[in-house]
Image (tube, rainbow, N blue to C red; front, top):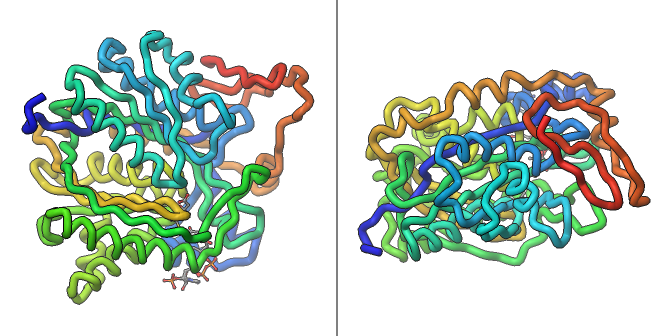
Amino acid sequence: MPADVAIGIHDLSVATSHYVLPHQTLAAQNGSAVDKYHRGIGQHSMSVPAIDEDIVTMAAEAAAPIVARHGVERIRTIAFATETSVDQAKAAGIHVHSLLDLPSATRIVELKQACYGGTAALQFAMGLVRRDSSQQVLVIASDVSKYDLDSPGEATQGAAAVAMLVSAEPALVRLEDPSGLFAADVMDFWRPNYRSTALVDGYASIAAYLQAVEGVWKDYTKQGGRALDEFSAFCYHQPFTKMAHKAHRHLLQQCGHDAEEDEVTRAVEHTTAYNAVMGNSYTASMYVGLADLLDNADDLSDQAIGFFSYGAGSVAEFFAGTVVPGYQSHLRRETHRAAISRRRNIDYARYREIHEHSFPVDGGDHPLPRETVGPYRLAGLSGHKRIYTPQ
Ligand code: HMG
């Protein structure tokens, strides 16, 4: 394949959960000032999956419109990133493959490294398309962020899935080769196999994230990457949207800039609106920010965007992309807005019940009551198997 063939994101689709818990409700319950959430961490509400939803149903909902628009002929790989996997062995992407009726000649794999997994999947996809530019890769990032009730992390929960079609001559964003990389062995956030909620050292995790910003930028510069002033916008991983502000302020300071608040806001402002109402979606979060930017900013044709992907533990990567002229006619703005506004407000008592819910582990037949109105649902468990169906 000629070295100058562009590869990148050809289509991008976001889905989220059936319910939403406003931070107003959480604040009224725990006695916090709501401004701590709205202004302090930059979060207004968080998506909460119904009992009959999970990473697979959200992923299938995100991917279905991509398959409908582009067909299945060229998709030979599904790379599914998640850190809230539903099985220790079987890739969640196999359930999506089945729900979407994709051809049997498909390679399917699940990838994990906390929130960085989505970027690992994207880089894997880029390599496959570079090897054979006639192929397309369906990259899916889907997660449900869950912390203990009444813990500081509770306000930074959320849920969403992003599906991206990676191909040659992409319609949305051409991705560039130089990547800045950074890894460090830190216990800032983790989830042992026996827990359904994450453990986190909140302030240490913010410090580890900022250290990674420094690390990737140093390496990106060494790899011959772009200069800071070449970028029009920056998509940061957003565990809460104020983190994007903290991160960009830190990057500017590292580069010897004054880090004026206006400059920070200008760089990230169009990437935070979806995340502010969906909450942390781990692997999907940075790409939810990209969807927001493409959907809602003024024309970005030919402009460079910086991507900072962080996965606790930790691994981080910085890379750049250029927005393709004409991209606006390929967006899914209305569907994204509808997915956000379709969510039903949940009261605190029901949210708590869902949070504490766990599935029986006896291998019996356990059909689930119908809650979600999304296109796919988890119909129940039977013989230790999860049964997924279209609505
Ligand atoms: P906390 O103790 O609830 O909150 O923890 P706080 O007291 O630090 O307040 C938060 C901010 O609100 C502060 O602003 C306060 O000043 C402000 P800052 O000093 O940071 O600029 N504040 C107010 N502002 C206006 N009006 C008020 C008011 N009151 C306070 N009345 C924390 C917050 C984020 C630590 C907690 O929610 C947490 O532990 N979250 C989970 C961890 C996390 O998100 N870490 C981020 C980096 S790690 C990461 O991104 C990886 C991750 O996505 C996982 C993965 O990779 O898989 C998490």
